[in-house]
Image (cartoon, rainbow, N blue to C red):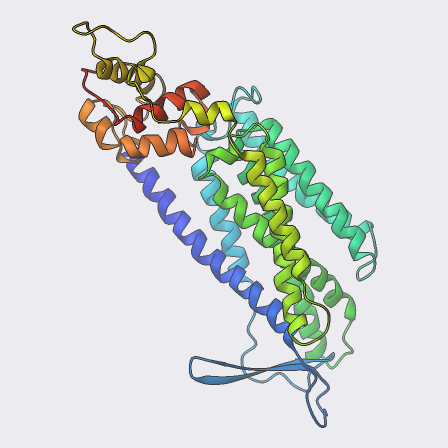
Length: 421
């Protein structure tokens, strides 16, 4: 029952996390588009409008305007965009707690990477979230004055991200390292909203309501942090999805893959940002950024490609004996070729899978402790073990590459299970 409730909590938290993240990212994409698509109003401009945008959607017309400094008045309801950010971080942290921190020995710790105790692993994760936020704040506050030297700040932040990712990959399992890297960046994104963007906007509103001149500094700082959030978005989304793809997180060059894909995502995000201004003739076409991003993604594909030996080992076996190994039995001998292969696979299942998918425990409602059940789930076993390399979770049982190749060959040979367990 505990596992059943745990899975439901994981599912519902993940669903809620995706919903609020879509709302936050959608707002981010919209306001970047809006800010970069504004054009100067035609005719007289008594209200000192910096730019406006006409749009049509859902059968109606919309007229958005941005004011230079203080608007003449604020009428009606003033909408704030911040709950999307807060709930994205809250649900993300709860999901991290349920999926990783609750059972660190299964989800965080990989003894082949670092010999950590459960307590050490949990403390290090929390310390990395807070520590990266502190390093980011120090860079933004002291590397350059707000609005000046933004390029230097961006470079230093990028270096900090790579350094944090390197530390994570040296301490945790591959899938946990990717997720923690994204969680550190997401924590900075929400802290930007909580500590800088919203307080700065509230200060501007208070000054406006008091009839005071607007202080430009909160707006400058908020703009800088908002730009950082924009370029963090696609890398963070990738890290959130990456734990489903063990062929990347479990790769021996996983740090290089993580950096390549994150930088590629940031470049592609820059392409979409610049595209809005290009459409208004403000600068050239940003296609070189998209091309550079795609090149980095292709490089990641090349780096992660299986070796020739690995490809050969996972080809369909021409002889069933290749599954079971050893010499081909003579006619009439025992066991049969299919039985030998089945017995070998059952040994692999018993060693690496039945702890979580046997009689006493059925994670994800999957059992593999009988020939019929193994046959029923053969495709999923092949996908999770040999293609995605996501199972065993964090490879806590130390399944070898040869065993993964054996599972692939067994499946492609028809998944024989004609033997008793």
